Image (tube, rainbow, N blue to C red; front, side):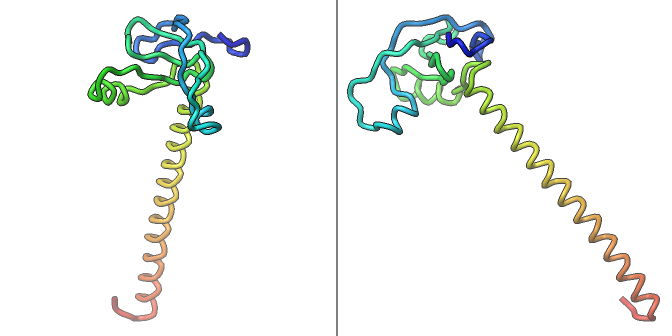
Amino acid sequence: MNIWRKRKLKCPFCKQVLVSGPMRDFETIGEHVMCPNAENLPKKPTLECACTPNVFWEDGWGDMYIIANSREQYLELCQKNRPALNSGSHKFNREKKREAVWKTLHIYWLVRRMWIASIHVRSLIRHHRFARGYRV
């Protein structure tokens, strides 16, 4: 567990605290960006949960990694891809969702105000035409 982290990471499926697993050699996204063709990957600490035997989480950001024996199993686990609770990745995903909700609400209220304003303008135009003797 990192020093800066105050809360322990939890499994997103069963909400229990993740326990440290074996050291594994896997490639994080940052390592892949820096050196995409790396062959010798360093062993890094992992976190595991008993409820998901083919999944482990990175100890740093809490990203989920999958150990799959078949393509079907891989695709099934990819649909459940979730970072560990209380991790940096979980917080980032939560902030993205919150931001998307606020954008949607802002657009809704903007469109609603424009619609109400258009009704008001239409009624003013009709009133002006009738006042001058024009027919609609």
